Image (tube, rainbow, N blue to C red; front, side, top):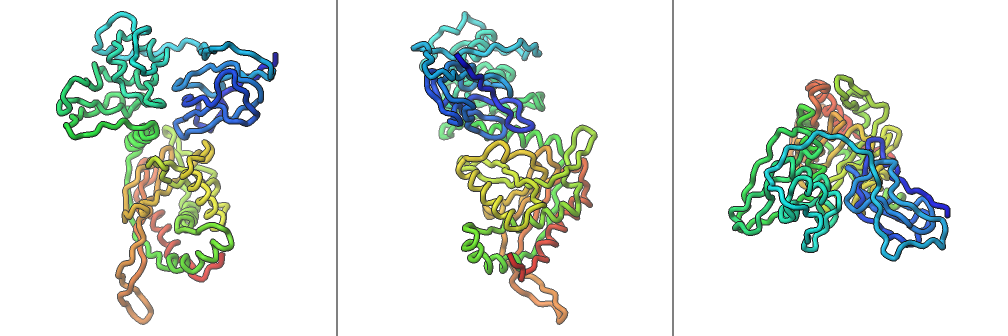
Amino acid sequence: MSQIEIRLPKMGESVTEATITNWLKEIGDTIELDEALVEVATDKVDNELPSEAEGILVQRFFEVDEVAQVGDVIAIISADKDATVAEKPTIQTKTKPAVIVAEPPKSNIPKEASILNKPTNGKFFSPLVKSIAEKEGMTMETLQKIPGSGQGGRVTKKDILGFIKSGATAVIDASTPAQNKQIKLAPTNTGGFLANIKEPIVLAGPDDEIMEMDRMRKLIADHMIMSTHVSPHVTSYVEADVTNIWNWRNKVKNEFQSREGEKITFTPIFMEAIVKAIKDFPMVNVSVSGTQIIKRGHINIGMATALPSGNLIVPVIKDADRMNLVGITKSVNELAAKARNNKLKPEDIQDGTYTVTNVGTFGNVMGTPIINQPQVAILAIGAIRKVPAVIETPEGDFIGIRYKMFLSHSYDHRVVDGALGGQFVKRVADYLEQFDVNREL
């Protein structure tokens, strides 16, 4: 019988593992070539993996919420269409080599008899999680109170290890009055970063609502905390007069939509100016590795985009310096649509070298953005406002109505000093103010 091993594919240069979030096929199901087999989540994006073969799914090596490494065999498909499987197949756990790790701090949880076979009141715990709980002498009551970050609130390996590492004896005691409940914030240093920092204990009031962060929000929290501690942030501000851009877009937007079948927004115009400024000041387009500065050979612009869940993600326009304004516009629209419809792929959010975030979308005039590691700078674009301004002419100065916006440039002061960071954002403003109102598309 011909059998095909389905391995977890490489999903980006920095992605080494993925969490199985949902099997779309059961053992014994027939599957077609390129049909979706399993949903996985990396630290960057959720994705469906298509089957690399057609046949019958006969084995699965990972359960939901378990973590597989790139290259691991996650399933086996039989090419024999007459293959049979057991009536009640069980998921076969992949045997992995033993790994010696430092023993985590012992918790204050009292030991008791094995909980592997104790009732769970309908809540699912993977064998791995229950095994860890048994080793730590954890009670089933305590295990059930650990907030889970997995699908449907399931407790993952990371959840239980983080709980044990915190040294807590309970998360929420249901018998305690609401005003006296102590909620320990979910650890934001799950990767071991800043392990000695203590999170505050927060008391929930009787009218408070307790909500668990979703998986992406936890990842964002980790990334933001890491960035602020890795990079000393400095922010420079410049106000730009974008009256010419405002008038030009209003003049061409209907013609552009009629010709191209999509809208032209201000975002690609701003990105074009940013790309020009990066070419003038390439040292903002770098990364830092220890004491080495890596000067990037490509200009890949990330754009912070809101997801339907309210979280933010940063899809990337690759080689933006090789595109004209129409090309940048189409890339911006395509990536924004993918984000809105949860269709982004891992490659869509990788390899960014500089990031732009449009805080003006929310009516904000300026912001202090946090650098998207491993980059060294990020630019926040504020709302365009109609304001009175002094206008200089050869005939003299006068007061007029102009369209203006603030640019907020945050940068890593380890490698970008105030002169470079300030000159860069001023150059972006210069390109915006010099925009040709008679430009042809």
